[in-house]
Length: 245
Image (cartoon, rainbow, N blue to C red):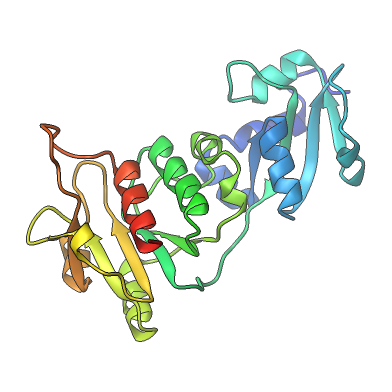
């Protein structure tokens, strides 16, 4: 059992709190019984399971290397206020392309809670995949992972240049929608085509102008009250379910 936070293995786990280190290691941390089991059940590669002493081992852990740690070590590497006593090191999954008819393109969304909620909602709405553009919060940020409630393991997510991806999607017959407040049609006046990709923009700045220019349609959600705008994750949910009507 590892009892010291100065242990070399503990130092390596702690490094995975940072995006740069996650990229270099090709791995990230998943915390809590529910999320770790979601990763296992979705056949993602589990490098090792870290269990706090006196926490009962589930039967499925027999298939993986398990490292026992003391309570102080678990608290040191945990990113939650009340650790459940289980963390897994999961191998990052590199998606090479997106398939299906309904996709989301994420342009510089920076709030991890928003991105996680969008991924969770996309999973619930039966979307086929998500493409993350530059400037978007890291997919493997711990707050993103927790906000997905396990959906990160269910829906394909690709990192790519959105401009290039839009060009490719158009060649495949996709209609591209960009969320915008200017020169935009109300979403509920549009009958979706068979293949649609929706671009969602930064919380403050919205979708970049050059991406809007590439889109086939600018769409908006009407505001009937006095709110200035909708949260991007709420807007995403409304538009995704509109595609499925």
